[in-house]
Image (cartoon, rainbow, N blue to C red; front, side, top):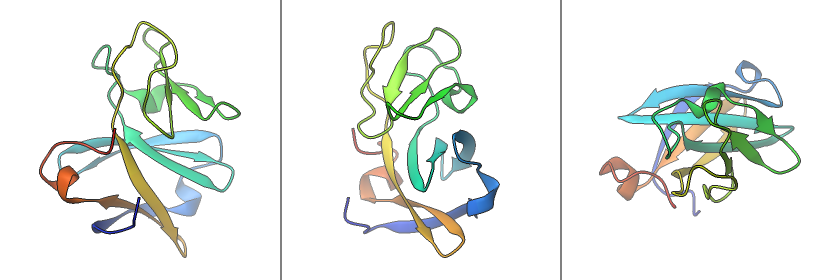
Amino acid sequence: MSGQGVALRLCSVGDVAPGTSRRFDVEGHRVAIVRIGDDWYAVGDVCSHEDYSLSEGYIWEDEREIECPKHGSTFSLETGEPQVLPATDPIPVYEVRVTGDDVELILGEADEAGRGGRQ
């Protein structure tokens, strides 16, 4: 994405350990922030199969996926596409950036209108 939009500070870099995720509620969006090494991802925190928090699931670092702890569906952190059934619908993907020690979520016009991240 282009980096245009509203930047919202979520936390400090040290607040999310590598290989983990953390949920944030931002401007009406439930977002899971995932850190893999120095790479950061932001996806919708709700499994598209059932209303369950993805941030509580396992992070597949090599695959760049997050697993829903309820039924085991995994989603690409890069595209939001489901990789394993039973989920068949993608989850939103948002832009995230690190500026100094701040982790920021970038919400564009579609996000602010409540239509979710890019899919």
